[in-house]
Length: 578
Ligand SMILES: [Fe+2]
Image 1 (cartoon, rainbow, N blue to C red):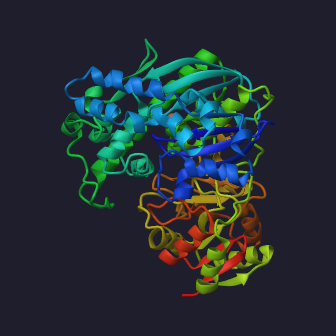
Image 2: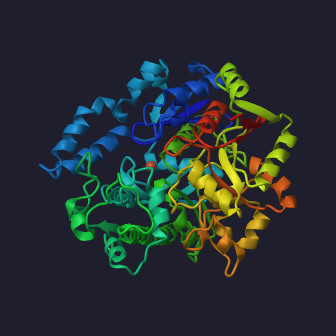
Image 3: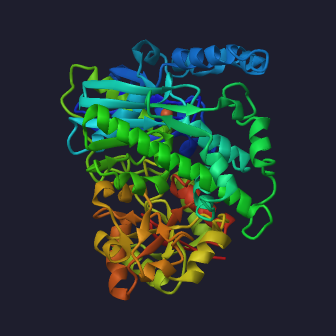
């Protein structure tokens, strides 16, 4: 058995691959600790892998950390040391926290799982991303991997040629500190949203912006592609993320764009500063789409490939994927369901497997958006106590529970789901979701504002079967896999009814989900379609700011903290008593 681990910098996670090259299990630490974005050493996740799969440390052949920590540490130190004395606080922080950084992962393995430390190897950060994406491709050979994130352990973007899983050759990189991912995070920070969480808000806000506005053009000019050297270029004097522990952008950016938005004041459409912020977001989105186009064009030029893996945090910018699909040389783009750093545990586990004597093929059985094991409730007694005190069980039989849930959705209700396993990636795809009729404006509004407290400029995803999506949206076959995990937005067809759906964004796009065959939403839609409902609005089951629910207790807690009344579970359809 092989374990891959991420942590310390972004969300922690752990994955398990068996000797046949099959991804067996995967946990994100935040799911278990209930701390949003938990980046601590993933001891709960590793313990859960061992306990759930009944394996001992001696059964583990190798464990891989998802990056080379010393390389990451030295690159940051090297860059900061060139900007003394301004960077002195960052340098001091880096050295003071040396023992708590990812460099110490060896010690944490020894402390929490004695014996694993001697089996520890390190995978290159971007190679971990590539190996997370590669199993989702039908063919594992002759494909180009594009990785773009904030910062790996050497670079911030890379292009690799995948000859086969054992021969992956990096052909181009963007060296730190120039970084499309950190640029987008800096604009997120400038606009008053939390880095690593608020990027979705910037993307949604951009649709209200004007590309021809002065603010958008100023942001658009912050980075460029140099056609002579084939490099991304950036005036780093507008940013401080490489010099400071607390500031991502410099005072020069505020001189250029005006004062940064106060993060403690809610941004509401119609406010005096709303349009300026939307225009800045538009500029960031335009620049991202432009640079992605340049990087993919260069990737095609140097690899001659027409098929691409795309991973790293920037690949979660779903609003830019439709543009990439229109590039004339693109036949296919595959984005894994968990393309950010938390998903890298999967690639790191596969890295161990490829380096072993057991290597034959990488396997993630499709549909494979979930770990293969059904989640077992942590505390059965607690769960039953909560249910008997707070809930009524309306239906226990699975089909009848789904039928009853469908009738409630038809009547305009919002339903929560805690079914089978949780999703691998950050997007809830039906097993840990809040769902309602996507064409019922009152129900969608209720889901968004009364239960979720979402920003109004962040639309909810519509989920449907493929044949229904064809009736409403301009689908692109090049990115058909991306639609399964909400990895790409698409445009509504011209003069189509979908333009008026409450799940449609202000720019006439929607972040659609095409449901997998035999998934929870597929089963529900099979019952709903004869009732006249063919699209479900789908959002993650959580209270704003919390991690998505993991087990049934989490789902029951959401009910008790919100106005959600119905929960569709493996135990049946539950209704809150009060
Ligand atoms: Fe990354």
